[in-house]
Length: 184
Image 1 (cartoon, one colour):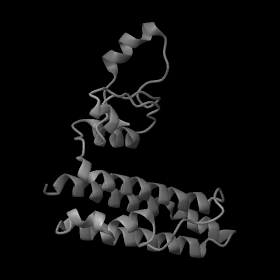
Image 2: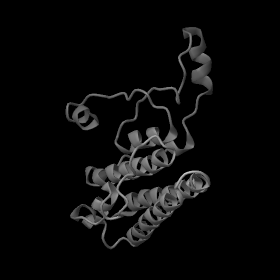
Image 3: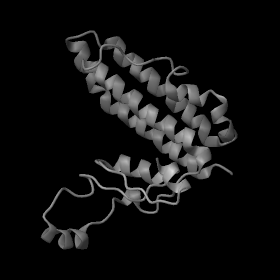
Image 4: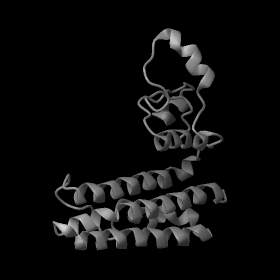
């Protein structure tokens, strides 16, 4: 939708922004206007001037450049990686019947990473760090699933979720670095 709006020289406003990450993603995709609970809750008209006077964008949103079209597959791959980690958590918590693909080369992100789509990033030193972190995320998830046999094992697996999310965040930070340092 953002690309279509740009092609027709129209502005676009994203609706339903509820987190810093959603705002960051929209900014990267070139959408600079949004509304949602993270930005402001519904309010009476007379409260708007005070809100406008005090509201500031999240620091992560300030100066966030839009990415070029060439980086969109990378952005999509990072979104898919977030979803994969959330699917692991859903499985461990019993909200999902089967785990997502565990082979680091076969998940959505892995297919991107080991395909021609990642070729423009070859030669970037950060790509090796990304490859290593991605494999570590999968290895940790597999080890969590191995101990997730119910009872105490499930509790042990769930206590490692913070570790899984920390690895995910390190990987996503490296992906941002890759986008910002890639030579055009």
